[in-house]
Amino acid sequence: MGTDTDVSYDPYDVDISADPFPVFRRLRDEAPLYYNGQHDFYAVSRADDVEGVLVDWRTFSNSRSPVLEFIKSGIEFPPAVFLFTDPPKHTMYRGLLSRVFTPKRVAALDPQVREFCARCLDPYVGSEGFDFMRDLGGPMPMQVIGVLLGIPRGDQDALRAHFDEGFTTDPGEPVDTSEVSMDGDMFGEYIDWRAEHPSDDLMTDLLRVEFEDETGTRRRLARDEVLTYVHLLASAGNETTAKLIGWAGKVLADHPDQRRILVEDPALIPNAVDELLRFEPPTPHAARYVMKDAEFHGETVPAGSALLALVGAANRDERRYEDPDAFDVTRAGTAHFTFGFGIHYCLGNSLARLEARVALEEVLKRFPEWTVDEANATRVVSSLARGWESLPVLL
View (cartoon, rainbow, N blue to C red):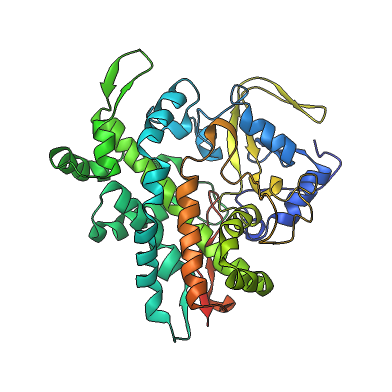
């Protein structure tokens, strides 16, 4: 279990988080099952092991959330937080959302996302630069979620600031679980208004949809369940997509040859989005609660443990990928673990891909070249996500 190596992985270490990939490589090679005594968790880093953990929900449960701090604290969440459940509840709640959060509804957002990008980017044409996060990546996801849910544009900045704060931690410190809430009270007024004034949006669909719950009762969602769903959609859809767009700005600046390929052949942009997700995943790991003893590489992880599936490490496992540390927008079949695997595969993956694709199409159309203003770029301090708070670029 890595006892013959000095490799150490601390998910709260800001220096490791800035560039975790050298540590991830050592974990894969020297301690494929790793134990951190300070924070009392196990971790697996090879692609085969990460895939096995994410698929086997009976052994590696998501019922206490995919966040290490939540698992360790024993915090309880409302049942409608289906991200933090396993079957049969997960099947019911996820199935209900998939009925209203359809590919058709997501695809229909393309022109609105494109119009928003144009509104963000056009003022900077002919200028010396702009900020990938503050001017585009930061506000875009909440704008899109706002359109989906029917939240007025004037209220979206305050909601985004609330979720940003929830994802930020003190340097070197875990998330303060005492301040975590998933009750969605901030959306109460919107839901009450929408109940009286139905529209063509996701919030109305959630209020109207009928389903059979785990007791066999046919019903509609209760108000608190709708609140939870809306909170979940708004928070999950905001942070990770924003970070993805920020990484697009950074990685393409670091690899101008790959950026040039996309400028010359925009049809490769969807493939490039998945390569970005593989290369710099906004969420570097997913936690699970171990339900029964599990064996990895001749060692046992005891029931009751917390285990991290190191998605960022698995995405660069040379046992699975050829030349994994190379960023290659032409890489064929860019499968990765960034959206998870198995029953908990990210339901919002198509929305994140659409936002990133449109953002890149609109950026590259206007700005075929840029460099990052490294002196003024700042990282987000968080154990939950890796990315940029500010990413100014020079044109």
